[in-house]
Length: 310
Image (cartoon, rainbow, N blue to C red; front, side, top):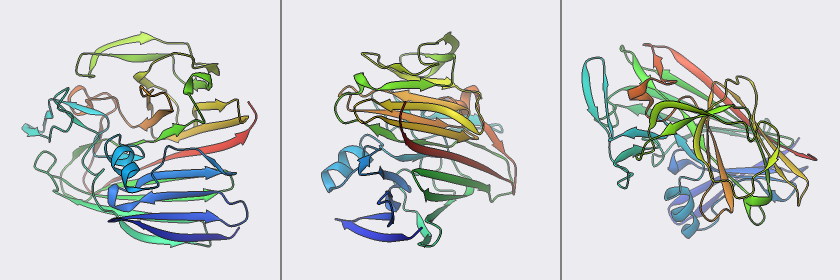
């Protein structure tokens, strides 16, 4: 395969892309916005809700967190507060409507380009988190490898604890999968049988509810979702979308992400399917929270595969 790397500048934002010259398939990233996974295109079809101009960067990539990398926690931390190792910490409140800290601390940080390899079809970005926020005063190294191969895009992540103390860690991604018109007609499958009940702040109450609606591919219809599902999947199929108008099947495979957040926006033009290492508020409730020991690391992976046929 032959690949071509390119950089497009939109105001102060670099859009870094890699294209398979044989198939025309491509993906793009926004390094300045936390290694944002901006786009993935297969056979001329947009798979992700992407940004192509400044207004879209501001309304999608920034305001809606489309494609955002979630780290060092996923989803929400209630009231932005948690305790760890006998100390209390306070995170920034960036969801004032619910008084929560939302989607981590790196979604607006600039990642360093380590490699854009036109032979292997890969791009590698990294970020050295060095006591970057008083609410999370730890030191970690975060590296992402994006690989385009045929009709698939694989995102591999390594998180290293660079300090002499253990720390709580969470990680995830926030891609919105786009459709040609409305999501009501798409089919959805989730490898889960229950979800977390949430309080008014969108925080798990500690109770679960059974959910079997999308164990097999079923039309979404008017279903509204903003829920976290424990999938119990590691290295397998976590979720699937089928776009009947185009006869297009989109599969999500995960390793190290045993939770899945699914969200249907009010405009119903896309659906967010978010691989996560934990449930919301994991620094407090401990559900899926990872305790990363000194000088140790974890590896995570998710893959988007696009195929024809249901």
